[in-house]
Amino acid sequence: LLDEPTNHLDIESVDALVDGINGFEGGVVVISHDRRLLQTTNCALWYCDRAKQSIYPLGCEFDAYEARVLKEIAARHAADEERAQARAMLRKKRRDEARRRADAAAKKKAARAT
Image 1 (cartoon, rainbow, N blue to C red):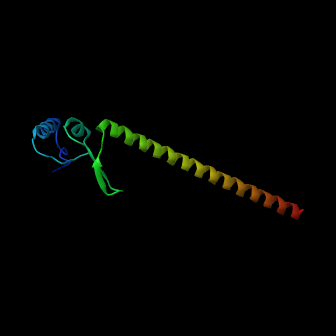
Image 2 (image 1 turned 90 degrees about the horizontal axis):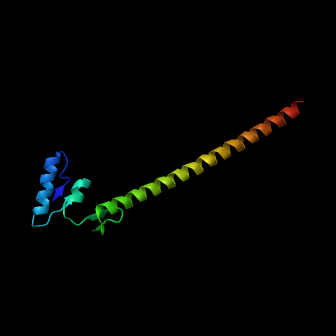
Image 3 (image 1 turned 45 degrees about the vertical axis):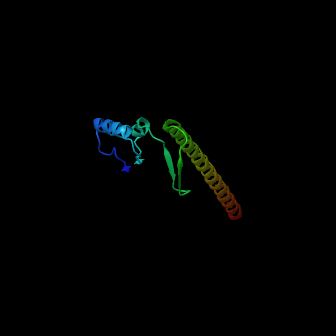
């Protein structure tokens, strides 16, 4: 079991680790965010889904998984931007409406004063 084994390693040490993992005849569980390690080892990628509390085979290469995740992040970002714009428009509409009411009240008050 290797948990983030490339932390604090230089490039040569990472290369040696990759060679060691690839040359090992037994099973190795590697927990890592290091794309280079994940791409260069002969391994099956598994995904830990915290929300579903499950672990399952990724079913694709790392690059395909990365592209999918980046696409999901971009979609969430776009949705967040849309919601922010909708909130800004609603705030503007409310301010404009409040300004119109204040102006109308001021005109009404001025008309009564004359």
